[in-house]
Every structure is written in structure tokens, then in C-alpha cells.
Amino acid sequence: MPAPKELDPSTSIATLYGNKVRKLRLRAGWTQRELGEKVYVTHSRIAKIELGTESPPRQLSDALDEVLGADGDLCDLWWHIGYAPPHLNWFQPFFEAEAKATRMHKFCQLIPGLAQTEEFMRALFQSGAIYSGLDLETKVSVRLGRQALLEATSPPWLWIILDQAVLYRVMGGRGVMRRQLAHLLALTERPRVHIQVLPYEAPEPIAMGGSMTILTLPKGDDLVYLEGIRSGVLIKEPEEAAKFSFAYDRMQANALSPSASADLIHKVMEEHYSCAPSDPA
Image 1 (tube, rainbow, N blue to C red):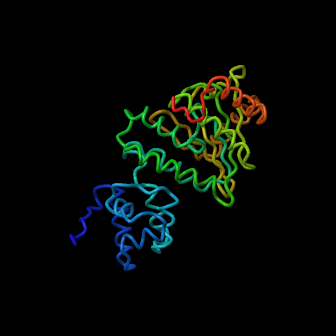
Image 2: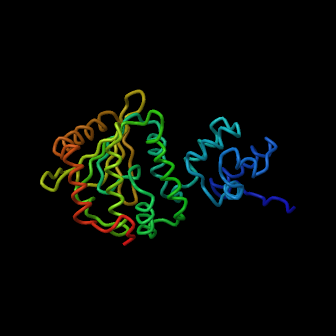
Image 3: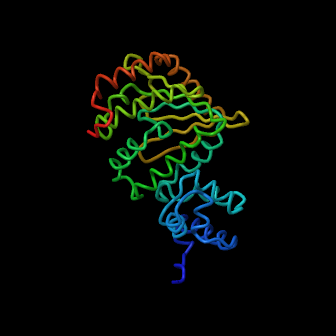
């Protein structure tokens, strides 16, 4: 049997993560196949993770951390694996705060990552490939991992205000959009998810400037995250965060009610994306 490929943990966070997994696995006396069986993945996937060629989704990273007795080290490293190239890691602090939040209030000019279908996010990432050299599968894996927040036993409360234009902006074709809007409607059936649409007739000045997320942490502190195409800023100062909370309250008051918003989403889905659900066009 050939000797395992040597890893240089200084080359990237992914190889550092993989090196850590390999050391913990060997310390436990397990083969890659045995470790894979314990976390319900194939041994070849464990091999890719150890080589740093695949980044695990968050659920898998948490499972590896638990079975390997990493005491949170793998969980901590996961946030830095490289969701974006080093010069785009400006949203890393946001990810860390998002994972702890008990409430989230979002205003979006694009369907937010937590509410995207896999095929929608693939189309989105492919269309924006020019902005990042990161491989598609890593992006999809990390974003799907973030969605695990909504599957927790006690998920955070999530309020989403969508700019009405979001419903008409085609991403991936009519079939992708139809299934994406159907997914939004399915999310509204969850007790802790509320989706509203800010109609064209009720413009708000802040709605012209990009996307905004307000995170409420367990101790009650609010953080505000403002995101553009290639930049983002996390606002922690209470007085500044309060200004954006007030702006969000205004948008929420001017948005359609959750039930009226669901009716509009359904109407757009039927009138603009009336292809068969299996239609990839």
C-alpha cells in the first residue's frame, strides 16, 4: 500500500483542516472507511477532506468534530476553510455571528442564501464566477451547510423582506425560478419563518442600497450586516445598529403582509413561470 500523501498545512486552511482530521483519525486507530461509516459518508469523501480537495458542509464537520473528539477545533476551523478567497473573507465574522443568532431580520434584493434551493444557488454562483476563483462545489456545500440552522431543534426566528423585483429576476431559467418560489412558499409554512414583499409602490431609500441583515444574539445584542457585490461590513456599535433596526421597522410596515406576500409570490410563480415543475428551462 502506498504511503499517504504528505500534506502541507501551511498551503491553505483546507489542508490544515484535512491534516487535523487525518491526525485525529490515526490517533483513534481508524481507517478512512471506518471513519466514513461513523459519519455516514464514503471513505473516498474522507480522503478528499483529508487532502484538502473537498470542504465538508457544516453538518459533516460537526459530526467529524464529535466522533473524533476534536473538542470544537474542527468546528472552529470550518469557518475559515475558505468559503471565499482570502481577499473576500470580509463576511467570515458574519457567518460566525449568524450561527449564534436567535433572530434574523433580512432585507434582500436577491433571494437570501438561507432560502435558496440548491439549483438556484448553483445558477447564481455560476453566473458570478467572474468574481471568485473558488470552485462551485465548495460554495454550494458551504451554503447548504448554513441552511442547517433552519433545521435545528430550536431554529432562529427568521424574517425576510424581499424587494418585489426579486420575484421577476430570472436565475437559472423558468423551471428553476418556479421551484425557487415554491420553496419560498414552503418556508412560510414554518412557524418561525416570515416572508414579506416590499412592493414597487412603497419604495424605501435604504432599499436602494443593497442587502441588510440584522442578527440578534443570545444576550440581546444586535449586529447589522450590509453586503454588496464584493464587500460587506458588520456593524456592532449599538447606536449605529439601532438606526438600521428603525429603518427595517419602516420597511416592514410598508411591506405586504405575510399572507398577501404569499399570494403575490404564488401569482408570480403561476403567471411568469408557468412551465412544468420538471422543466429545466
